[in-house]
Image (tube, rainbow, N blue to C red; front, side):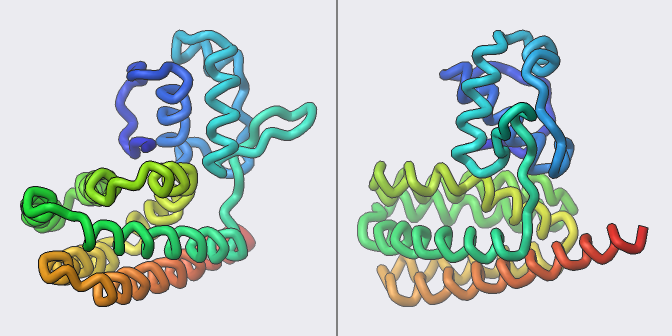
Length: 232
């Protein structure tokens, strides 16, 4: 999954995927803004990789819905619109519902204990005002959930949508601030007893509510940004 930090680029397992994750992180946090053209040669020089590695990474980013490769223009960072966000969350929520059912059905005591152990870290990150840490912990919980649910086909589908969902979620987390993050924090604390009780229906209802609300708030935030842009 793409990282939201802006630390220097370091290749991981697959060079192409590492390049894609690095660029994805820049898009998610807004360092590469919507409409910006990503030029292969300068980027390859900056990251000290081949132009071919960057080209392959851009194809992956297109699959992740973060760039669009246009004839004669190359890769351009996609724009988030209300229409696209609604469509994104419709698919994302349905897939996460299935993942949640798998998790509740298959999670071991060790999986549940690991999830429970991360909740105090969420609490502490908010207490410290460290929103970036909170966002990173949310990613880690998602990744842990994918592992515990143990469905590689579902995880692969979610993996292609996750970067776009993360981009929308990051926009809201940064602009919605502490009130929204407190709602997300409460979601995780409410989810734990449902997982412990193996209450799949209750967990899915809870998840659906939080994602429906997140989608609506992202749409509102996009409209605020659109009006602000027009005013400027």
